[in-house]
Each structure stands twice: as C-alpha cells, then as structure tokens.
Amino acid sequence: MNLVRIRARSHFDQTRLKKKVDEGTFRSLGHAGAAIRLTARRSIRRRKKPSRPGSPPHTPTGHLKRVLRYDVDRDSQEVVIGPVNEYSRTIWNLHEFGGSVRPKPRLLKSHTFRVGEYGPIRRSGAMLRDRRGRFAKRSNQFARVQIRSEAQARRATHIVKQENEYRMADARKRRRYPQRPFMGPALESQRSWLPRFWANSVRA
Image 1 (cartoon, rainbow, N blue to C red):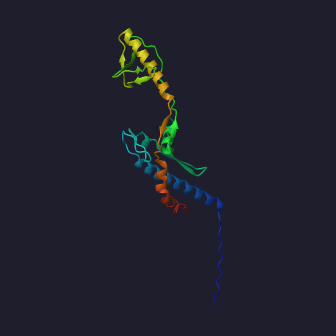
Image 2 (image 1 turned 90 degrees about the horizontal axis):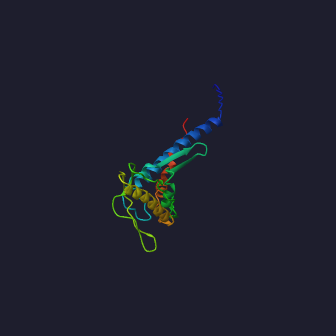
Image 3 (image 1 turned 180 degrees about the vertical axis):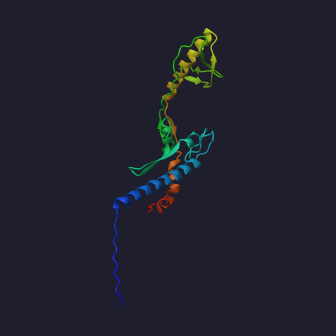
C-alpha cells in the first residue's frame, strides 16, 4: 500500500471579505428601500377629498407619490425612505405622526400697479370684514389682466395688500392634522420580507 500525503493551505483575506459584505449590504439596502417606497406609493390614493384619519393620506395631484425617494448611505450602511420635497416635508411628517403647526404665510410681492401693467383681479366673490374687523368671506381665485385705468391699478394694488393681510391672519391659527401614516405601515408590511433581500447577498 502506498501512502499519499496531501498538504493544503488556505488564506483568509479579511479585507476582501469585508468589501464583499459591504457591497452585498449596499445592494440589499437598495432593494429593501425600493420595496418599501413602492408599497408606500401604492397605499396613497389620488383623490381630492382628504382620507379618513388613520389611513394613508390622499394626494389631489399625485405630488406625494412623485416625491417619495430612497437613498442608501454607503458609509453608515443605512437607507432613508420618504418624501424629499423641502417645502412639504413638515406636512408629510404631520400626516405620518399627527400634530399641529402654525403655517408660515406665503405672501404676495407688494407692488404699486400702474396703467399698462398686468395685475390681479378677483374672478368672483369678495373679501369682506365682519363688525369686529375680521375677514368673513374671501375669493382666492385671481385672474391676471392688463390694467387699463387708474381705478383698476388702485384695485390691483389693494387686492395684493388685502390678500397678504388675510394670509397673515390665517397663519396665526394653528392647523391640526390627524394621524394618517403611510411610511410606517409600508415598513411593517415589508418587515417579514426584509431578510430575503440579504439572502445570498455576499458573492464570491
């Protein structure tokens, strides 16, 4: 009987393994973020009327669906999912968790209009005050027309001033938002599927 001796050597490359793990984690986080974002988008209906409290919010124009994004950070190995619109971020946060806020007024640019310029007129209704000086009725529909008389110029200037006064008064009121979560439920619905995104994620 002949005796056969075999020698084997193995080399453990820790740096290469860590690189493979990081690459797999980055891909898996991206897949998880995409799945949660898609679930959240599908839960939001395009409707003009507000949704029932406790259910995902409605979006009249589809804006909320369009601003949902996800971003994977390689360094921290995290994925962030949610609306990215800077102006509306506070609103989406209030929908998700509920609460109240005093809105920042969006004022029109003050201007003294002259004949020949284009200025605002009200299409219907009027802005009136009650006996206490509070605004009682208002039409917020404007049309932009060419001013043809001094009277029109004065009215256009007054409309801008009056509209800004109304917006300032309206901004003093706190607006309450009932809870209408859409990101939390999307995460919970995908939670049991998340480990599958990491299955076989480290490739040789």
